[in-house]
Image (cartoon, rainbow, N blue to C red; front, side, top):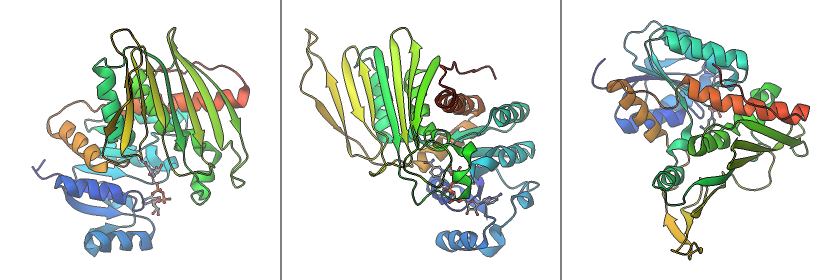
Length: 335
Ligand SMILES: NC(=O)c1ccc[n+]([C@@H]2O[C@H](COP(=O)([O-])OP(=O)(O)OC[C@H]3O[C@@H](n4cnc5c(N)ncnc54)[C@H](O)[C@@H]3O)[C@@H](O)[C@H]2O)c1
C-alpha cells in the first residue's frame, strides 16, 4: 500500500461527503462511480475528477490493484452485495449505515468480512458528531455518575426524501434513519436486552410502514432507555438526546452549537446548568475517514466493524418486529 491512500467512491449523492472526507485527509481519489451518468458528471465536475476516473459500473473497479479504500454510499438494499464484492476483491470498505436491512444480509456481511483480510467499517457517523463525542467523554469521566435512563430520537421529515428505495418496507424508517439513534444509545449505554415498541402511520402516505415509532428498552435492572423515530415530523432535523445519570444529566443533539450539562453539589443537589459550546458537524465524514485510515495503516481494530453494525440493525429489526406483533423482543446478538 502506498503512503498516500488511494480511494474509490461509489454513489455520488450523499457519497460526495465521502469524496470530501477522503480529500480533506489528503487521500488520492482514483475513481468515482455512479450508475446515474448525470450524478456522476456533476460530482466529477464539482471535485475536478477527470472523465477517465469516472465509472458507471462498480464491477469495473473490482480487479484494480491501485485502490486501497472503497466507500459505498448507494441505496441500503445494495450495501451488502457491493461491500462483499469489494471485500472479496481484497479492498478495504467503508460502507454507509445501515449495515443491512435483513437478518440474512447481516449474516452474509459478517461471514464475508470475517473471511476477508481487508478491513470493513460501517459509517455510523453519529459517533463522530462533536456533541456526541463530548457526551461520551463526559460519561466516561464519571461526571454524571451511573446512567439510569437514556433517550435519543431521530426526527427527520422524509416528505421530499421518499424515493423508491426509501419507500421499500424493508427500509423501514427505524432501520434506515432510526439506526442513528439506536447506534448512539448502544455506543453510550451498551446493548439493550429487551425492547417493546408502538408505531403510528399518519404523515407519509407514500409508504406502507409506520412513520413514527417509540421503543422502550431495558439494558439491565437499573438502566432503561427510549428511542423515538419520526420520519414524517413537521420540524427541522434533530437527534435530541438526553442522558440521565445518578450525579448529573446531559442534554444534547447533533445540530445545535451548545449542549447542557447538569451536575450536583456535595449534598447531591442539582447545580446551575453548564452550557458547553460544540462544533456543529453532524456529517463528520473527514473524521470518519481519518479513523478508518488509521485502522488500516496501523492495523488497528475497526470499532464499527460488521458485528457492531449488525448489532445496531438487530435492535432496529427487534423494534420493528415488536411494533408489528405487540410482543416484547429480546434482540439476538448471536452472530
Ligand atoms: N450517514 C448519514 O447521515 C446519511 C445521510 C444520507 C444518506 N445516507 C446513506 O447513504 C446511502 C446513499 O443515500 P443517498 O441519500 O445518497 O441516496 P440517493 O438515492 O440520493 O443516491 C444514491 C446514488 O447511488 C447511485 N447508485 C445506485 N445504485 C448504484 C450502484 N449499484 N452503483 C453505483 N451507483 C449507484 C444512484 O444513481 C444515486 O446517485 C444510503 O445508504 C443512505 O442510507 C447516510
